[in-house]
Amino acid sequence: MTTLASAIHLLAALFLLAAFAMLSQRRLANLITLYAWQGAILASCIALAAYATGSAHLYASALLNALLKILLVPALLRSLARRLDVQWDRESLVQIPTVMLIGLGLVIFAFNAALPIAVPGAAINHATVGIALAALLLSLLMMILRATALSQVIGFLALENSLIFAATSVTYGMPMVIEFGIALDVIVGIFILGVFFFHIREQFDSLNIDRIEGHHE
Amino acid sequence: MIAHLLVRQTIQILFVIAMAPLLAGWIRQCRAWLSNRSGAGLLQPYRELFKLLRKQPVVAEEASMLFVATPYVVFAAMVVAGAMIPMITTRLLLAGAADAVALAGVFTMARIFAALAAMDLGTAFGSMGARRTMLVGFLAEPALLMVLFTPALISGSTSLVVIVHDLARHGVILYPSMVFAAAAYVMVTLAENARLPVDNPDTHLELTMIHEALNLEYSGRYLALIEWSAAIKLLVYIGIGAALFLPWGITQGPGLAGLPMAYALLVAKLAAAGTGLAAIETLSAKLRLFRVPEFLGTAFLLAVLGLLVRYLFGH
Image (cartoon, rainbow over all chains, first blue to last red; front, side, top):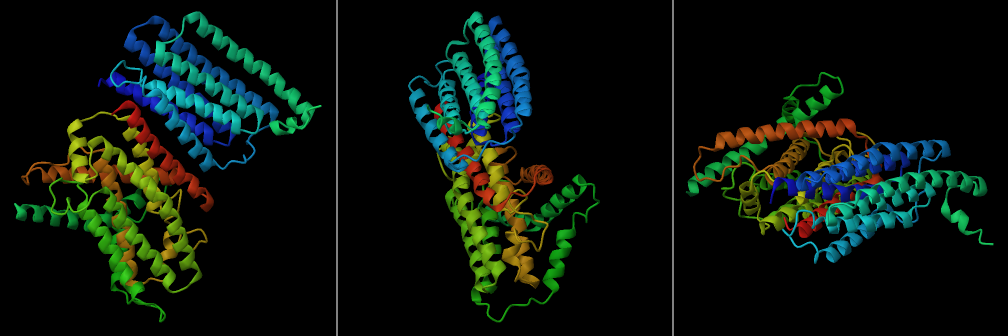
């Protein structure tokens, strides 16, 4: 058990913790901060993997992720939240402790599904597949349970974080072109969704998604 | 051999009883410094205890035996808990007497007696405090057990001696599972000892108080015993935390030579933990009572995550 591997495992566990914290957070400003923290954990995880394998493109990926997820995207989200004047997510129908328990169930499922892959000692990052899968399911759960459009988008971004995390742990990152492509997609996606939010609000006077469901015709 | 063990056991019990008010005083002093006050000094809890011990206790006419017996039961339970924990040395007379699960049981027994005694007189504050204590207790106990199970899984035994022995042998490895368990343990400690995010230890008459509501009817030496056992409980909780998560410097050998060093290290750990506790209390505001289940639910979640992460990583 090397120090490096246990450091990566610790960061992976913290990544999962950040996913849980986002699931339980109602305040939008704190949610964005947590997203930035998750990005920071992801970037340092990639940097450690880069150090372990000595590959230059993982270093570039870590730098790209850090720039995008600690600085750029949270800044964009903050300005969106300010201009839309939303601070709190509406109290959801499902209580927070219940959400946590559902989340725990998902984690157990994900870990069980990943155990055949995560043979202890096979390679330094393989045990983190389970963590990535669990974080992915938790972000999906967050998208399902949240009422306002902005926090659903943050759930979507957390989903993308988990995917990058999974890619890093399984195959030591994707080719550089694809990572740049994804990064560009995320930024463009946020811009488009930002414009979309204003349209939703103009049309329905609210960002709550269930208001829209009534307008089928 | 038995004489050796007896000597160590006696020293540890005396240390726990004597040092508990000093720890309480240290935490109060740190909180005073952190909020820019000068504070009453480290020895203030001793002065309060001596004052209370000299006063004549007043007991209501309707009080039953239970009410009078409870301070002694609670005090004895805390001393027993303090005697069982290998926080200085793993070679203790009573260390093998109970494992981690029984330890949680000792705390629960003290809590049940305190709650029953508070309801004994039928005053409004007493029964309200009793219900709140039981609410916090029934939420904190599963979290505490889950926290204790993580190191128990790592070392393969629920006996505290084996756990400490095993963890101390491994040296400095940051287990992810233990990090989660430690975070959950801090939250449980705050809730169980009625510290700030859950209960405010400074207030004496407030609708939301928990610990103080239990003691409102006590006076004189009974109140002194209750306050003293609360201080011992805090020391014991920090002692368990130090034994599980920072097991360095706990002597394993049969001789008495390592003891002074172990005691010095424990005092340093207690002082550091007290400073940390004061910092947490200064930085956080009291939670609404109905947010407490959420707080303790998070502690439970962290502890279970620790267990799951251990299964995934295999260490």
